[in-house]
Length: 488
Image 1: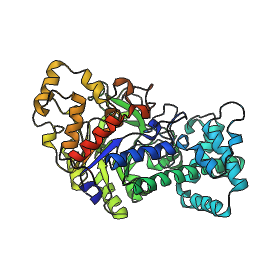
Image 2: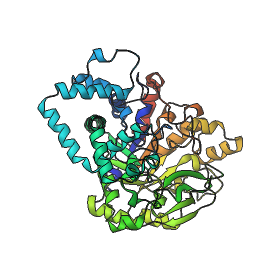
Image 3: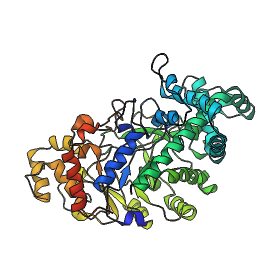
Image 4: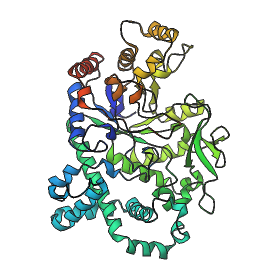
């Protein structure tokens, strides 16, 4: 456990897209700084986000087009105007522009008006990130050329990355490739400025690494050997989880599994490069679906659900050892929810990684339930719920009278609403870090939940507005953070 995770802290779970603002989604501009100021003023020292990657049409940040690239929809346009790379007159011409078009105009302005220091900085960025950026920029240009088709539907020479075909594509699509590189340059400049501001305000940025990557991604197209694919590049097996709390038929995520033998042969280089990018962006990282580093549920690709599959072992100990050897002891959190075996717990504990405790899972019939606060250890992260849960108010409104009585019997104080009692329980627990989703701070119901696992529509679009964050709610959080000794 690093020093960062060895102190009592409070955090808030809120994705960047959920920030207020006039754009289609929240972004990295002034509203993000205002949110950091709110955290600072309430004594909260951790901001947990969802993954930052470029999403597909379903908007899921857990199925991104790259394990490295940032989502250009999070770029703040005012920043480009401030640098005089985009001018106000260019914002109002014709119908409302998509953000990508505005960033492209910003790139034209950059080429025309940027000083040599900025142009040199851009060149240095492209060189430093070439190990993923070159493939990603070409991938996005080709994906656009082929009308967003998955790479396995491209012409065979490009699908199979034949050198002559790639060389010709890079020549033909150079302007699009350069524009995508500029998008990423702007994204990372804005993100690192925000991270610096957060650090100045005493706020740590807490990121999320999906264990698997999307099949339709630059990673799989450019690194087929890293994944379990047949000679045609197709997936014989896909990732998911068996039936559980969230779904009676399990969850068939459809991601490719890793070719762990190949990864071991290369010293897990692909994973280490992935961690390098994320460690530049975040102070703390969560490994989503950590149990997949011990064993992962492999589903035959022909199956429509996740019911029929098998657990296949993974070399998690060797991977985590390689990570420690490369980066030292870094602040990692294990998302250890779902079907957790003694072997998974042993792997987590061997590397002293804090696991997750979800209060919405706590109140069953057994006193040894690991999610009950009395069973916590300091080296864990306590949550009322996560982005995959209902809001705590929505969850509590669906409880029966008997279920509510069980919760009050454990927590006491039936005069307090259950969702407030759970916030008290998380912050008052021995867990070093307690994270409260923003919806719970705002006391919002089920219609404000972020994601419903097992569904493919209506997710990832929730946003809050500042009117919901009343002085009373801000004062309440400030009081609780202080009351439970979570100010740093």
